[in-house]
Length: 236
Image (cartoon, rainbow, N blue to C red; front, side, top):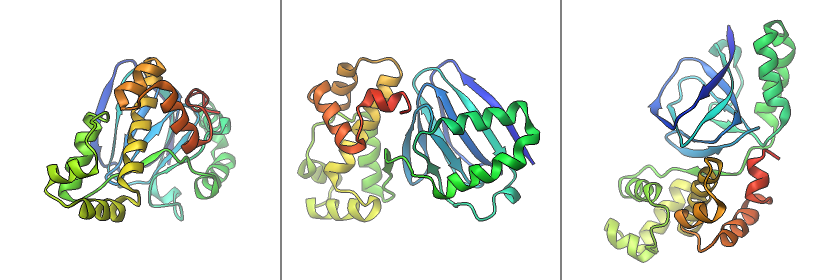
């Protein structure tokens, strides 16, 4: 049992974490969203395929119009697939395949094995942010999500949270696999990229996210992703 369909939202929207019984694939054709699970935040831009297994809490935030295609699947079609979210590097095949299933559902038996193989084996997109799960670090995450340009350094955040700098570093590393500096920079990259996709200039997006300039943002993005932000947003 499956259902392929188009979706469109013209205005900014937010959906809190919720759980659904079906598995899902979706690809954006335009716009950008921050896609959320209890353990990660992803930036979804056009061309990237998101695999969402059934029974996993998820939500999203969009700051402008978004549109794309989705495929919902009964869990019994998804045996052997990963039990966590996968966001795959951009490939024009993904959107074309899902659109094909909207107009030609009979092609499912031919296309689904190819999509399954991609979910299991294709390269994953590297722009994701692991979410901390313990009390003080949740506050850190929430505060920086609201204001990524907050200038407080590690020692100042440790005092705010009632922890020693060493304890803060150790806990964040254990829960996210990232240092404080890397975690915050990745958060800022996601915020700036989302703002650009929603129409902000590179300079405005960079400054609002906490970068010193658009050039500093572009340099950090190239270092992390290997391409310029504008190239990434085009799904290349």
